[in-house]
Image 1 (cartoon, chains in turn orange, brown, blue, red):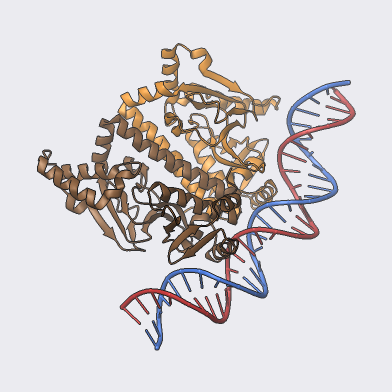
Image 2 (cartoon, rainbow over the protein chains, first blue to last red):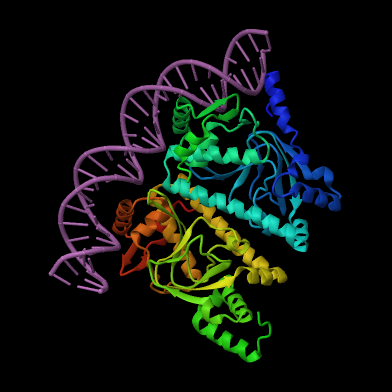
Length: 249
Length: 249
DNA sequence: CGGTGTCTTGAATACCATCAAGTCTTGTGG
DNA sequence: CCACAAGACTTGATGGTATTCAAGACACCG
């Protein structure tokens, strides 16, 4: 992650950043293994894994030359830029996530992928991946189920943006992220603390609000004892309370 | 599963499906034909096509017993209901549309499908459809590309709801529908008039606004000479102007 | 004919955006 | 290591967009 932190923080971070591709196997897709196989068969293991510093753009629509990137380490976001400078984040990408399953079919997405933290990612050759998946129906099914989840989250976001208040949207985002991080063993079991590299403008761009208003809502959550945010880490102090705010039902 | 279908039966089914779903073949998926094949092999042609009156619910999450419905005729909407009574429309379903490609994998959607006009639809058996698609990679690819389009539209809606004004959202919805209807030859070539069964509350639920505000925006569009709405039909009088309002770029 | 659903319009209100100023943190170069 | 600049966050004041509430016009249907 971005350089100097206190020794304690460094340790804390290191504990979970050992999520190299070893951990990747725990995630839904096992795509790292697929990627490794691809790289192997293409004899291009060296070039297939790349590292990108925080705040840099990983790929735009144009420079996807038939590659399907998957996130090995770090946080990223797929972002739609509008001509007036405003942005909408479609989804946050966590380790083990594929940028978009649609890339399997050469569908140019209208968005770009931006690194939030330092990101290590791996590009799978589209044609090769397709070949592998189509020859192994069970693996294809796993892949498509991940795609379903991608779509389900998009649908949820539509409901959030269309019909929920600022408090609800933000609470739901936090709970969603907590759930996804838990599945990846990226939440400390006892303290429930988790790394949280998002700036408030990321949250704002994800839930369709302004950074100022996000700040106000988060302050309110903090005053209510629902969450604790400090040093780029988040703890949900009162999950039930937060869920109540989120209208989870 | 009476596997053997006599040539006569095939002909019979094909003829009947042609008569009812004549237009369907023009659409992206040709799924009516697939459906016909399924119905044939399942020897249940009679029960596979159903008609539902306007405003009725076609299916809920619960009563999807491994079936994938496709719309043959009429307009429908997939809707998410919230406990406070508000609603969000995820997408409008037009003839030839599959309700959701995700149903192929038994993913229970958390939405229900509602008929807007009288709707004729056909249910394909999930397992059978899956079998057919997995045995024909080219057909599977067509299917998955329709899925990509479904997802791309969802992403667009996220951007609309998150970052655009009421005028932009409504203009974009109208333009999107016009485009989809054009592809289906459901727009009169000369007059550019099209059937438009949506009530304003449908539009409101689709773009995350209230019916009152939709009414005001549509009146404004009408006053500006952008559109004409009457007798459940819509004409885009000034496509360029409407596109300008929509910030299409 | 009353009833229901749809649309319109106006007034009051709520929610969130914008603007602005200030604090604190983070990063960088001297 | 410090100084300075840039970015991130907070907080209050003000304004705009969309909601809510309400009343009335209109069409459609049993």
